[in-house]
Length: 253
Image 1 (cartoon, one colour):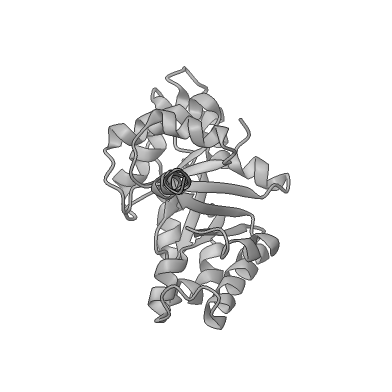
Image 2: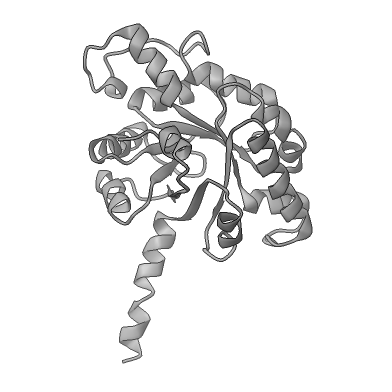
């Protein structure tokens, strides 16, 4: 399968969703068949075991669906575990400084970009014997690293964050951002619009990508039209609720 970066470089606008609750190898396949370009396993708010995450990543690798992981925090063991499972990339929540971004790169990338531990007989290589230097260079190129911008501090430091080599994209978290701004849920507020545009400009200025995750379609549509390239819509529980909501038609007769 093409890596996320390959797809973005081809000018594609990618749309993913968040897996928050249901730990299923099959769910990843279903999401791919529904047309999503990638999915994100939420290990910040979710309560998944490492085995459950590994199974979902394996399902994605088997069907050609990139599976990313939102890590709980910037710690070496979190980054290393999910990368060794074969995750296509990682999302660091509430990134507010270039130093946090640099730590993510250091833990996720092999030398000379970082100091990721070298253990090559793992799921990320398909347990195959690989040429170490060649594989590690390819992994460094394909691993997709995103910083989630969810606060005023993140917006204030977005230019420095996007300037960090190895960081590929900024993903806005509008719920926490609007909470931090004191305007929870007011996504069309001028202050939110200004913050979005600052993130887009900073990412584009470094030749990188930007996006946002909304639970509903309407607030996402304007930013799709403005060209944000890697976005997320809804979640596993939200999509189930949308489908189950059709039951109302049966009750109405």
